[in-house]
Image (cartoon, rainbow, N blue to C red; front, side):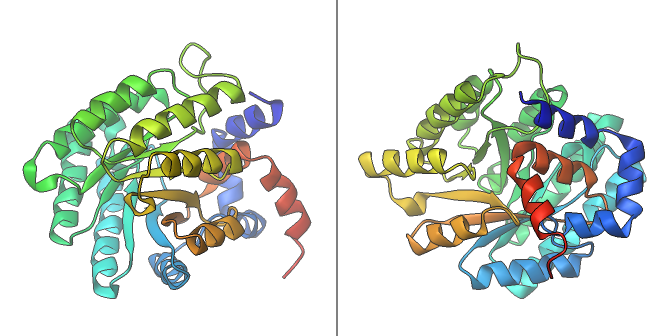
Length: 308
């Protein structure tokens, strides 16, 4: 892992800097490239704009590691409002959430009940809940919870998960999840993990990503291939063509504000693209992990900070 990547991941966990950044006008201005805004209305406006460009959306109300059950329930309420607003506005959108935001640190039963209620709502609204993957301390609990919810017949196709290609365990996890028919978003991974748990070298992460992508595309389940890496995108397209896999049976997924040119070009080529749109006041950890994932984002911010 590069020094710059390690530094930004370390900064993402610094509570003092987080408080200062989230309260400052300067910090909020810097975050605006990657965060749609601070209110639900901002997120819905961004989703409408992206839909008009032919892009699907997943909405993420930012927040993680809540400290009280009341905070967890308040976080969930924002998602209930989103599900209603998506249905009312007929948006091509769904939701993504984190278990630590739903109170898993306070008790698995609390988080399970809260997420179960959101999945019930998504079923009624004919929508979809994606449970994001966090650090390895939460990997097994996340998989277990999603499998438990997906096992209910009425929930099939309405709840999915994220798997990180840099984890050594991911091939086995994907095999388990595919037996259940669970929809997966595959990404490279954005947390700092020890080398016994995660591949430390980019070439090994890339090789894992390509291998797992091939498994997903051949599975017959609709998955999301989440990457901005042109090499990973090319490998996905080449494999789909070689195996005569319909481009409409999977989607590329990208982050709000990152490689917007690539998002548009993929849509023009006939691929499905979904944009991950975060919003809310608690943007600092997310923002730092985006800088860690792609150090070129740091140069982008520096070049464009004083432009209108």
